[in-house]
Image (cartoon, rainbow, N blue to C red; front, side):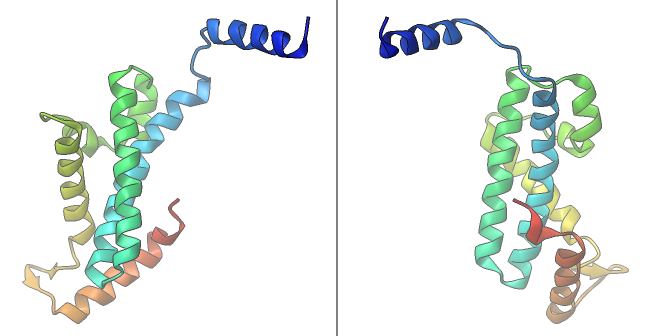
Length: 149
């Protein structure tokens, strides 16, 4: 038997075997929800302070993780315990809509509202632009926005 034939035989056998998702697979998918939420919050904050490139990077990071989470949910790849332990509860309230993009838009909007509360207004009064930017930069720094990958 040649090496190529042996390689093809092993490859065929491996592709015929259905391996279950690893124990950490479910948790990994659930963590995508947490990462999507945090990335969307940080994208909103960076947008407010004018860091357009970072806002764009974080938006697409959140978007891609959100799409991965929705796909895993549809394919039943996430255990209930991992959903309750890792996926932010607010996301579970937003998983309705005609398409994944619609759902992700709802999630982004909610994350943006959450990120900007107490930044745009303080005690019901609008903050001046410079105060908003200082508060947002502070939240970016303390929220570890730059470390999200």
